[in-house]
Length: 265
Image (cartoon, rainbow, N blue to C red; front, side):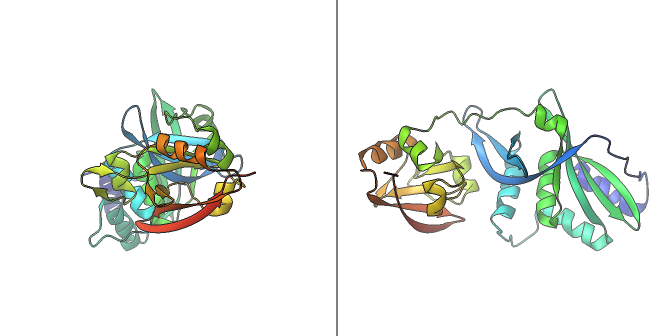
């Protein structure tokens, strides 16, 4: 049994419960932006972002937890509840409410989190892995916070590929797909071949943003031609005249969307 599920069962039995200690450390609200894969380790990363100054907070997590977070981000309903759906259902059945989750600390490159909940008029703080806490918070619409210490000491994430000049002009950065990313973003693998590149970043107010491209989109075609690598996308964009429209085909939440845009003149 996972530690968080066991903790909820303990609370339900009224054994070993403890009141929520006052948090003296300042915290900052963060939002979940997307899931990417670290190209150097092939490990999923959940990207959080501070609500005010947009500081990135990447947290390396397991594949199962990444899939669970991605499902909730995409609002995909499963025929049967997974572990995080079960936790939400247990909480609702007990009449407990999650007040917030907090990424509390980072030690030796390991992140720590707590789930703050209220049950029968009492407050509790449950130790949790950040990935589990985030997956539950998304399902219960609970706010997510990180301490100032965590944000100050957050590791940087390099996608391993610098955007080319054309990508910079459009205001986007992409990374090559991996089988893990394809599974998370509902991208079909045709004949064992991965088609498409993942949009890892979109600059607010850029041509890409104005055209409707979103972080987490997978660009699968440019002017009806399939794209498999970031280098192929950049090579095509370099042939496009500034101001001339071209069409992208993107996969978003398993659906194909056509987007027309142009390089700025």
